[in-house]
Length: 133
Image (cartoon, rainbow, N blue to C red; front, side, top):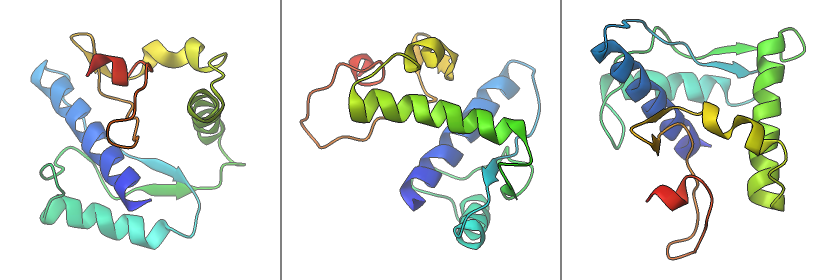
């Protein structure tokens, strides 16, 4: 969970930095579904801002993550649908839903930054992320 959150924070912060460099200056906010990780993830965010993470420090996030009840907001339900489509693609090989959204992930110069595929070292994969590296 911590590694995935570190990846999320780093990639979101870098996307905001790229936008800033093009004149689109804004801060970002990560909104997550309520969970038992709330306290630890908020602490990690503060740590990433002050001490940094393995790739640097975050500097474009407005605040620590906001936790909401997914039943109360459609945006977290949408995020659940995105997560479902990714999970189906990688765990079941079913790209039916993933193919609809695969071009919506953060990318620059033909390289996708907004999706990470963690796989065993040396494992072969032809997914959109792995095929770019």
